[in-house]
Image 1 (tube, rainbow, N blue to C red):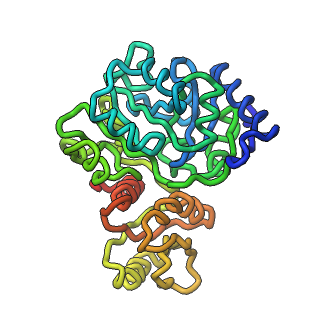
Image 2 (tube, rainbow, N blue to C red):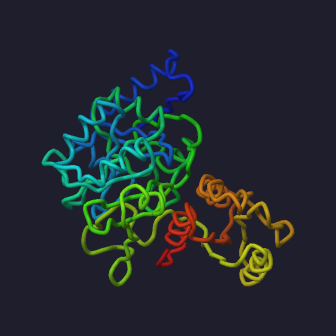
Length: 355
């Protein structure tokens, strides 16, 4: 198939061009097709969440295994409330408080699913992940489609998540019907996934909404630790999206370097010596000088501004892949705030257990 590129300016959704592009995307979704759409986190690969055949096309296009559940995105305001009521049986009080505080936004809540949700969405599990994205284009597209949209990241399974339409097309051109191009995403790492039905609540995937923020709104929360560690190919369905051990991975080998900021340059230089026979690239914070002259360097952002690191993380991994690097050396930030989410993604990309 030919993948349509539907360009939309998020600041001008009422223009004729934007309206035509969004209506075309909505038509494709209603007809059971696949449309990649921007959210504030990453680009998602969307399909009608209530259409089992359409959801199946997501798994086929991404080459995604059936044990990995996917998240459903809903519209804003009253339309979104109606969609939520159709998708879930009940909303606990803690979840209601979190919705009021963080929706629209990068928080996915695992709630008891209704009979309307196809088994493929939840990998047969009783809980379904739902969120209301904080991107005007995503919200308008879902509103026009009139259906909740199931949307994992719009990339081949296990590969680096996309933060631009160009990234989507690198992986899925010719495999999906359309991509709605609204420019780069804001956060750059996927949503926080939380089970508010447990006591204490459990974070299955760290994201831009932090444990500290959740705790302040709704009480006790802990980070999920898989019993015995997570497998690359689990035997049973995962309880949440993003829990597979190997996700977000570049083609190059990713080597993580952990050290205080003052020592990062020296530690990166030492690591580069160990990989001297390879084409080495660096994810380099602004405060650190390049440790090897002439090496491929991605200007990652300020170490003191982890939001910048999160926003540029996937773009950097893709850029160094594009430069032909066979090894990428990457510092790993402290597990503070969104740093916990960055660590989670980097460890999975490097195939290293733990956060």
